Amino acid sequence: MIDEPTNHLDIKAREQVANYLKHKKQGFIVISHDRKFVDDTADHILSIEKSNILMYQGNFATYEAQKKLSDTHEEMENAKLKKSISRLKQTAAEKAEWSRSKESEKYGNPHVKGSGSIGDTGAIGARAARTMKRALTLQKHMQKDIQEKEKLLKNIEYIDPLSMNFVPTHHDRLLTVKDLTLSYPDSESSLFDPILFEIKKGNRVGIVGPNGAGKSTLIRAILGQFAGKVSGEIGQPQHLNVSYVRQSYDDNRGTLTEFAETNHLDYQEFLNNLHKLGLERNVFTTKIEHMSMGQQKKVELAKSLSVPAEFYLWDEPLNYLDIFNQEQLETLIKTVKPSMLIVEHDREFIQHVTTDVVELKTVG
Ligand SMILES: Nc1ncnc2c1ncn2[C@@H]1O[C@H](COP(=O)(O)OP(=O)(O)OP(=O)(O)O)[C@@H](O)[C@H]1O
Ligand SMILES: [Mg+2]
Image 1 (cartoon, rainbow, N blue to C red):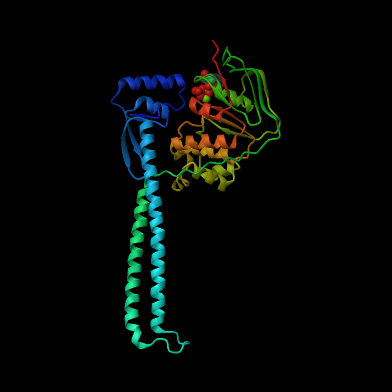
Image 2: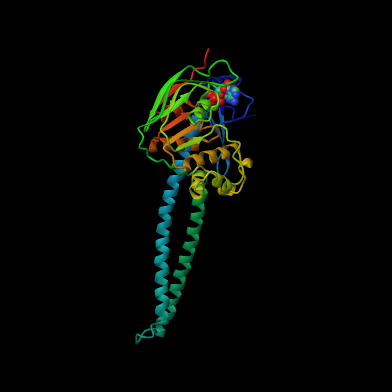
């Protein structure tokens, strides 16, 4: 039983694990949000849907294609149902209106002389009652149809597009890194071979490299939070609003209200972002330290989306996030085009969202 093996792992390690499982062929259940990894290792997919659990024979691509088909089918059924419901509603309303008018004819209008003649009332009244009954039956059918429709739509995931509090900057250049290398005080060698790059307004630079290459350390150095030896240059404008997603965030604790307060977040905007990321409302009262790993990641990410920022530093944003979130993030970045530096081991994501890639090579 293997629970999310690829989080934090670099490409080489991901491939090693995938190869091992591929050749093992059977005898394991693996939980993973890593589409490529699932494609490489699984021959059956158990999908936990909103209302049931479904088994698909094949890999992730098979599951995705079949899920798309069944979602499209549900949506078409829904459209048909909606049309027939609105027709039913109209007919029911017309019939109800007709029977009401006949009822009022029966009792007559006291202001109009000669109305309400006793001879007509029996027949008209009975017909009106019958029509009213039919209208009620129709309404009952409608209710049933609506319930059927709701049942049909149970398995479709509705995904809201994300938004971020991106503030356009007047700086042309947000980061300049020149011949830079870093080393920790207790280490003799530097972490990586010297690097050189810059991030101009609207650039999105991906940082890639193996585990331990110094990617997170580089981000901390950019933020001025690195106490070791810096050789080379890191240049940034003064007074730049930066939003940071940390790779490790287990110090996020307490209720969401407390968290929003300590981090000076607009509470409503923060909750809104959490909701869009798929955090169920009943989790809003759970303390962060009790949340699942993915939910805790949503908190760290929603924080970054909520603070006003000209520049984003995201350290492995995809760890623990589900496929829907990964797609949401990709769409968000492609739409907003913020200035960013992203560390991520998922090469496909990096290829899709960045404008440049810098590779950290370990020394030696
Ligand atoms: N405080 C520290 N003191 C000494 N060495 C450290 C310290 N923090 C990190 N390191 C070492 O520095 C190297 C770089 O760590 P870093 O977290 O920056 O790697 P990374 O590229 O982000 O790796 P990953 O892909 O696993 O996140 C690692 O070998 C790590 O063990
Ligand atoms: Mg790291």
